[in-house]
Amino acid sequence: MTRKLLIPFVTAGYPTRSVCAELLKACAAGGADKIELGIPFSDPLADGPVIQATSHQALKVGTTTDDAFAIAEAFRGPPLLFMTYVNPVLQYGAPRFFDRAAKAGIEGVILPDVPPEEAGDLSAVSDRSGVPLVFLVSPTCTDARVKEVGRLTKTWIYLVSLKGVTGAKMSADIAVFAARVKKLTGKPICVGFGISTPEDAARVAGFADGVIVGSALLKIVEQGGGPAEVEKFVASLRKALD
Image (cartoon, rainbow, N blue to C red; front, side):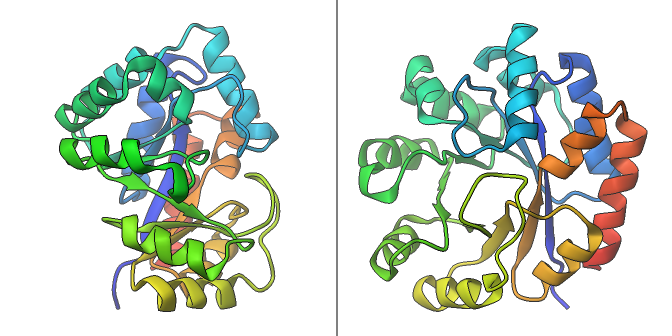
C-alpha cells in the first residue's frame, strides 16, 4: 500500500518562536511527511477561528515573514511548505520571497487567495525559483477551473473538503468530489479543512493521497498542550493512516 501523506499545520511564531520550533519537531517525531508552516497575516480569509486566533497571537508577539523564514531555515526534518496569503508575499517582494524559499528548501507555497486565473505573474516567479505554487480547489469549483488548476500544478492539489473555512465539518460527498478532481487533473490530491480526528484521517485516506490537519492540532496548543501532546496527536493520525 502506498504511504498516505500526513501534513500537519503549525503557525509560525505561535505561541512563541521557540515553542513553534519545538512544535515542528513534535510533528516530525509523530510521523509527519511534510509540515505546513503558516506565515501569519492580519486578514486570513480562508482560516477558521482557531487558526485566525493563532495568527493574531503570532502577530501580537511581533512575528514577521523574516521570522517565518528563520524558523524554516533552522528546522531539520520533513520538508516544509509555506501557507500564507498573497499580500505578505507581495510586501516581501515575490522574487525575493521565492528565491529565499528555494534556498531554505521550502517544498511549495500555498496561497488560498490566488485563484488560477490570476496566478500568471506569481506562477512565472515560482517556476523560476523551482518552488511550486500549490493551488486549492473547493466543492464549488467548475470543471474548467479544476482543469486549469491541474494544468498549473507541478506537484499536488490541495482539495478543500467543505464550503467554508478551516475547522468546520467535512462535506459528506467529499469522496465523489475527490474522484472528480483526480479524473480531471490526473494529479495527486491532499485533503484539508475539517479533518480533526484519527477517524476523519482514516476515512479521507480511503480516497486521497494525503491529509492536512491544522485547527485540531493548534487547538491542543490553544488549550494549554505542548509539544508532547502535539506529538501524541500527530502519532495517532499517523497510526490511523497506516
